[in-house]
Length: 501
Image 1 (cartoon, rainbow, N blue to C red):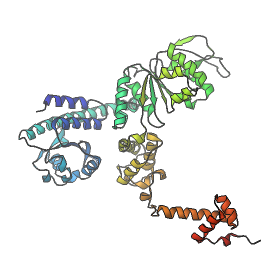
Image 2: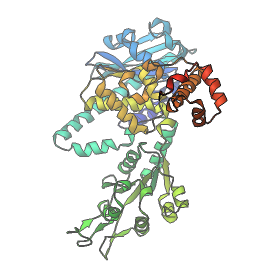
Image 3: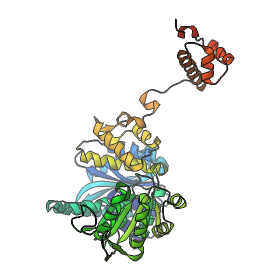
Image 4: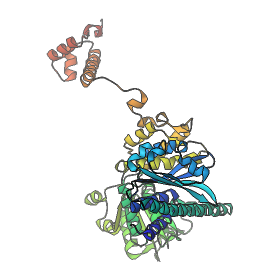
């Protein structure tokens, strides 16, 4: 018999874990399913605009089952649980028409309304196998508790949303948006590689340790740097960002360390550098591998001594910063080639977080695509509800050399060109198009394709040599005998390429 108090404690902790309500619901359903040994459990929330029950979170369903359930749930008896505000108990899953595809998850089902302010807001459903007469009662009791906890989360979310709107009306939205952008929960992905990133961010965020973020361009290094800062003890301090590759070598030092008045032509007043501006907060140096050698020396001193000296000045300025750096280059190779200081490398390489490229986290593509779809649907004021299955297949088949940034651009473009409420394959850029989708699939064999290429190549050389096979053979790197054999094989009339003098 599972410990009911432990189950409720786990669900309560998970529901308060982050500001991503859907992720919290999914985690709470996972905990409920694990403790009770359910086949699957899912939460439906009513959308008053469309009068549809929307599959908001599920545990124990694969992607295909999730899509199928979401498309047909309004046509099943689960709708009556919401409409009539009454529980549904099915001793056999076949009693709920339309859910037969979930029979492998359990032969029995129970569904309860989720009520908010005395009115149904959605439903929570569990499927299970039962060989114990006490088990259905135990599952229904805990499902009712889960429904109450979910309703409480919805109430809190509504209250938070109302307070946020009030703050926006008072012109305080900038700070909220900044915090939301870099909130840890806003990093999308639940693949194994990303869960490792989450664990590492959690481990290092509350410390003052120097962090080195490594990964290809477009993997979200700046987002992770922001998450570390806004979940650290320095969250109320400034978060200063510098892209070392975007600054000319002659300006990097002045940007980082500042300068005194008269330090160089045009320096008509004192200017603080980024180290001073980041005092009490975090300094993020992106593309650290592109830092000029002469600046590397001064950066090393600033890290070691925790002080900087402005250009043209003699006084040192104490700084209290947390340093986060990022690079898409192989620093070890740069050190071996003498392009990056070894002592600086060891100063930066205190705690390294590797951000995987998108091709190594294929399971996150759909989550990211839906996240960007919601973002740009709202930003461009278009009503695009979903991505079609062929388009999803095209996205998951693509290797995304530009990583998450490229995927975001792809979805934004698709939202802009979409002429309906569904993104189809033809809305995606040509780089993602496949022969099957575009209707250009070739049925030629390898032998016929090679023969066609060889024939075209011979004709091209005969044209350029006025039909003289000997000269064409030289250019093709073969003998005249072999070329004449090929000419006869492909029925090529070399005489029509000869010029009449």
